[in-house]
Image (cartoon, rainbow, N blue to C red; front, side, top):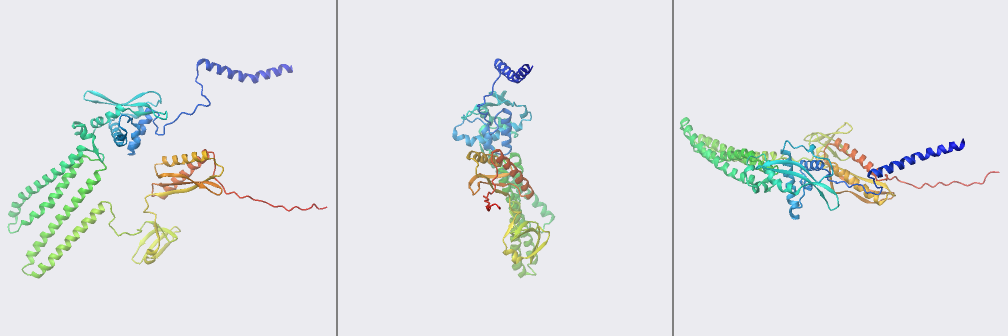
Length: 502
């Protein structure tokens, strides 16, 4: 009985091994693929070009961020000479983004997510009775990594498709070089159009002002025949300048230059408007002073010859200075007094911190963090070292990461790579060329220095971002197989050895 029982237990222990062997034999017979324990993991493209859908998603995101150099890495530029790839690639990528965004029937979600295959059509367009396709092709890089890029044939079609799909009704009928050649992201034909518009606006304004003067002079002579209307000629030039600037501004909306050129054109037009308005006001001052001079000449001869010319100069200088101040203010320059702090700003003065509540003639009042109000004489306040926190455009994230001394070099390298990736993936960070580096070997730790700027002025947002970075860096330390270093001290205890009592 005992022998039979032990035999049954032996059969039970062998049953799982027999079943495993049967499944393995069945898998070999059916040709099931086996994963080798020594097979290296599949490489993943850092630019996310593993499938047609992910590649198109990535290039659209790069274009949305205006990172055209990165977007060019999704194009197969092997047909271009090496010297032209870095120059023409970003512009071709920008045009490709415009082409895809202008097609309302294009849907990136419909593209394949399969990493295999050789070719995938992305979009198609009809031009001159022919169909022009944009497609992706699978390309093997030098490191044996297979990625999906827009084919070289599609790259050749980009300038023509950009012209076909353009929102401008003019570009569709222009020669390709006038559309494809750009300067400051503005096509050549737009530069030519801006030049012709300037000439046309100047000629048109001159014609209209002369015509208006010819029609207005007889009417004014009938209404007031005794008045001298010869001063009207002085108003022609400033009115002509104002009218030409207005005409050019209206035509510029139709030409639609790029976002890089538009601010310079708008500032130039604003300068012309300001000069024309100041010129017009000065002409009005001349007319008023002339009328006063003719009225006061007979009774107050000395006053009309001495005071009125001086008053005319003072008023003209005032008009000119006010115009310059208004112009600089509209350009974004601060024309007020250059004070180190203003009311409402948070600053550090001496060893205290607080918000400026009021700036008087004799003293400055500051509300501290303790909810108290400190009054500082302006003479003492001006001699202090002031640190204005509201004037900063970004905030520094910097600290030393101390890891255990027994951390291996490979673990340190992996940790440096992980932290660098964490900083690079955060869009709110502005990092230097080497934001993380091995600073050296300390007394009880290996020291890594981390430094980057957080693109925010809000202290609460900075603390939230800093907290997230700390937690992610701690995760990276744990993933690298190491830990933070702690100060160690060898404690040696001494015990007195005594003879046992009898």
